[in-house]
Length: 596
Image (cartoon, rainbow, N blue to C red; front, side, top):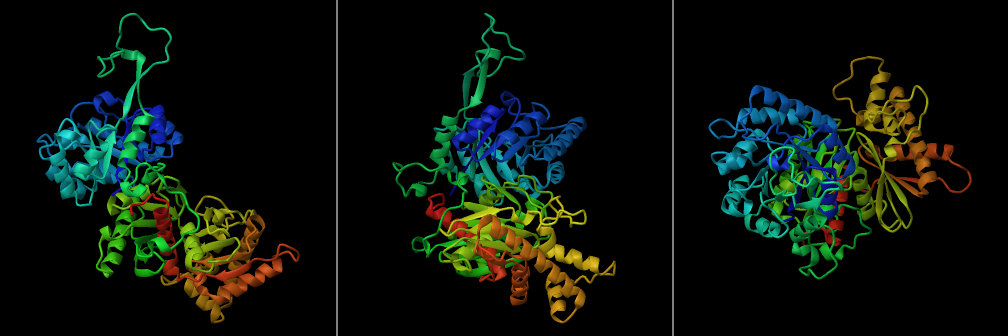
């Protein structure tokens, strides 16, 4: 199992040191000598701008106990709202009753206010009446993660309670061990307790930069813990300490059991796309492929040679990140159950998601999920599935599938894959088999004042003219305010055009013309020889391909380079995203950043 390493920081310097050392997430606090308080918005913004790691921020208005009055709760709620606006990836808080129980109603209310950000319950759990019993209370309140020392002063002294908490959690909540964690004990602590993550400051004292210092020690406040040099000493996370802890947490399998080989980054840090995939080494492996779409969430069990063994599709009911993660897990479990399997029977998982994907497995923003801001989707799924998760843009996943077992396989030249769904995704399958993504759906093809609005905030984007959403919007406009049938959808518009409906035919022709313009642009800019049209709209098949081809021929140069060949996907729409996502997971296995 891959164990995450969260580093608790109170400065930009510590955040940068933690990232350089291989941390997988940051907890940002103020006043660490007090156990951590809410940092300023200025500090939060500075850390978010300085690092690509997910940043979870402490919400604690004062030092002392965890029973808050109405004024303090008002501060906490205001801080939650401000931190959401600032772009925090998660929040850390804790509330207890006078009797030493978790204040479940209040906690539930705060979790709801924090949504869609995940909430961690901090070490307030260690001073409650029964930390083990508290786990179920936290789960029922919607908490995603609990940080605990097992009710002891340090985690090494609370091993048995930590084990019990992990057993009660049973994968329903992430359990992180914190309190006295060092590079020397991180791995043994994780191994003996089977926690999902470990948490520590991993810092040391550093001399300040002041040249003048008074002869006697002068404290600006109370005497500082572990800082004998008073105000002229800084405590900063140490890159070498973080790296040592991170390397100690690597699964031995990532090195084939041989630690003498050249070290690779921590498994949770490696999410880059790889080159072509040789199949022989893992045809027997089972992988999870996940496709998070604006309309549906699909999960499949995929074999090592690209065959779909079980496939489940569930509609997107709610768009918060928490709801989507829960839906993904539901789909994964349903697919596995078709084969009589459980999560422990798969080697890794790949997930394709819409929007801007950061290297560390974070969805920066997605037009299909407007409330999402830097959602650490890969980490959230890893915490629940307990296998490494490779997160890529959904268009990259679709292209990977086409390059693996679809229309771009063995092409011998660069191919563009355009995914036409609720939005539009574009990726390139290179001649060497590697895949790269781009925001091709948001290149502008209409600069006029009448250009269509795009959910991304721009006007005239390709997506605003050729997506299923755009087609439905134009269909509603064409009806001139008439009541639109609830059953009206893109497929019905294509069917109507095929039956001779002039209005529907006009809309389809307009869509195909705009598709052709974008395909020609891809040919010019990326020098692709072929464009594969995939996704839900591409299921219209040959009529769509033929119409786009004719528009390309009318608009394309009559001299070199030649017009691109337009073809349809060779993979069923319901399987392209999951197959491609599974391929990304398979690539991770090959490169040594997934367990074997």
